[in-house]
Image (tube, rainbow, N blue to C red; front, side, top):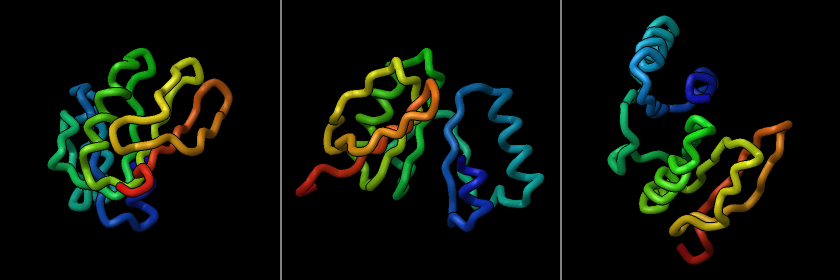
Length: 120
């Protein structure tokens, strides 16, 4: 998603990947496309990575990763968080200041959209 966003004019994208091989492939792809200068690549999601929109897609079997990522992002200025997850994974309606709005089901996975709660 981040590479697609960069190819469509996003100013920058932050990629968080723990798997060493996947991280290497990601860096190679960014370089081959000439967009590595607009990308931040990290192994850990951190509050220092400020973004207007966050797209999270942890491995589906690590359901606890959704909670930790959403709770951390709730304490940042991020306005919109989109979580891609399996339909069997029931995300909460609220994580800190983030409230779930729309849920888009696509086969056996979903996109859940979280935004700032009213008054935040």
